[in-house]
Image (cartoon, rainbow, N blue to C red; front, side, top):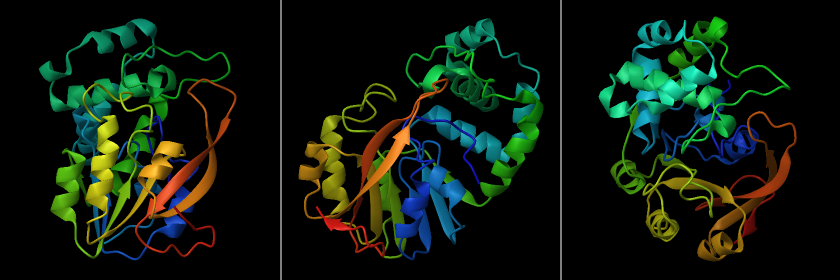
Length: 264
């Protein structure tokens, strides 16, 4: 199953490799959900939790889970047009109902260039159709609604989430902002210093984790001593036609089953 969202740093291509390395667990906890590609691609766990600090994103997930019919009713007849995009962009989400806020965020993500969170701009690609197909919206989101039915959706700081749900039987999937792109998702959400704080926190947990991050010398140095797997992947911006080949690091506090593991 695919995610219903496009998000910078989304793991659509890497999800399968991460799933292969996942240890046995009872509780699955996604610390920085974003588009939640792993949740949608993997088999269901007994307990599943997704979390994000972005209130707009969490409101969207909760609307699709709990109020799908009303969400679709608001969205179904909206035009995909630049002036509509600018109208949504100008709205203050704090003045909206939860459903209106979810619709606004979803529309801006699906019709904006490269799914930008900060200062989005309307995207029209001469090479393809809009990623927002309102004629099939009910069909596409019904499957998402069912998948989220038993998923707990949290909206808290990563450190609070990890401390609250850490148990020996918990598996944390940790996908923080890319190193060097900490402010992409908004100001004062994640800082360079948070990588050190996150490392120190993960080093002490009772559960297991996989952290995915872009491959940089700074990250390799910071997480030296953990199990590290280097994986090739690629990405492209919305509306683009070329993929950029990159490598990402999968950092773990356990010995993965895959033969590609190396010591960091």
